[in-house]
Length: 215
Image 1 (cartoon, one colour):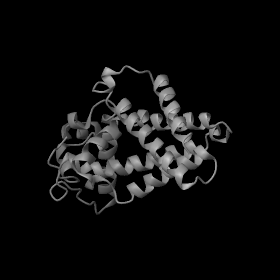
Image 2 (cartoon, one colour; image 1 turned 30 degrees about the vertical axis):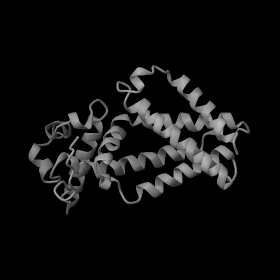
Image 3 (cartoon, helix red, strand yellow; image 1 turned 60 degrees about the vertical axis):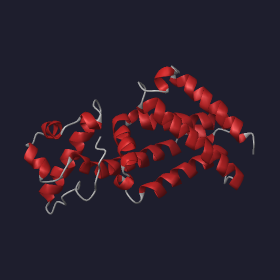
């Protein structure tokens, strides 16, 4: 990870032709493939170009540095979140009258999002904390809409303001816990607290239901 990320120096060189756009997309896809098994900080530009089957010089015609890929990787993640959310919305578990079933479904979907995109999310999670300018302008409003929709799935109706605030707290706890559990399994606190996935879902469900019992 580059602790001196500078969007002025680290930038995308905008392609002017179809061939350039295709090469840009090819390099992004190669990076995504590498992130399946390596961390972003371990991946070199030579790794990316090797995966893409092009010369290293080709990379520098599209990007000034490896970190310049991050905004485009974030766009890919946004697209994946949209597909994930659409699939979650169609889950029949949310038609159940039992709130516990609906809460478990939300938690399971949150964990699955991070499990299925572990390398990508880790790269974005770490680097956006160094400099949040890699985050597209529309990312936060879009994500807030997703989080708010989860509250409606849990309550099966338009929640009151008090219910919404509790649901916001529940989503924050579940997302933050899932990030630690999925992205950093070999680091503290996860490595010191060997909890199975099923046990984690149980604990988050119980704590979430306890929160909802307050409103």
